[in-house]
Image (tube, rainbow over all chains, first blue to last red; front, side, top):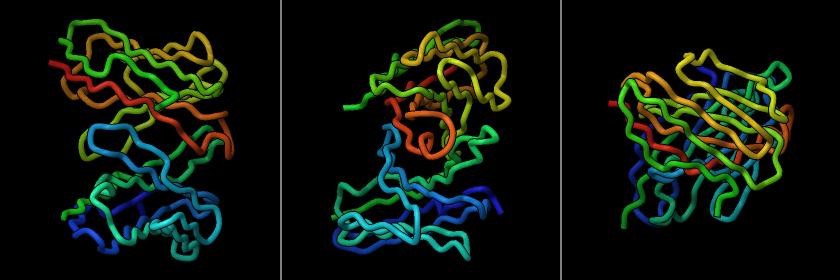
Amino acid sequence: RKEVEQDPGPFNVPEGATVAFNCTYSNSASQSFFWYRQDCRKEPKLLMSVYSSGNEDGRFTAQLNRASQYISLLIRDSKLSDSATYLCVVPGDSQAGTALIFGKGTTLSVSS
Amino acid sequence: ETGVTQTPRHLVMGMTNKKSLKCEQHLGHNAMYWYKQSAKKPLELMFVYSLEERVENNSVPSRFSPECPNSSHLFLHLHTLQPEDSALYLCASSQDWGGALSEKLFFGSGTQLSVL
């Protein structure tokens, strides 16, 4: 299994739709997980952190399934402004000198 | 407004040129990073500095040379690059290196590099 694997998409959805992305990871020892958002030609920005079973922030819900080693990001009532690439991020072993590991990203396009 | 500033935003250079990318962070962080982002690939970590000391170097070719004169500034010196080095180069910082404090990165807006 790759360290971090995401479905690249693109996911094309209409406004108001609910969409979910999955991400699988290989390091079973990972304790925290992150979703970053990257707009076209811009830098990644932290969207959500997940430290236990899940996290909810408005229309966004991140869930963690440790047994199956995947995390998901659910976006409800999609807005045009949600169009971006969503990066799944898992910590490496910083004690051994490994920084965050990024997935390739899942591209979302929300249309009117 | 980002607390991490990168210059230049765009750079076009020939394979024999020497150029430098500059990054400055205004967040009081102790760790700084260089990442490379190529099309259809995940972000690749190039270098990590913690308190001005290099702590990670991910087998990056010697034509890329980092410099960290203090905890607020980071440079990436480029020389004799190849066309396949064309990519978006992102600088980032985190509060510290190691453990939870290195898990939240703040990125600069990047330098889009084209090597001809």
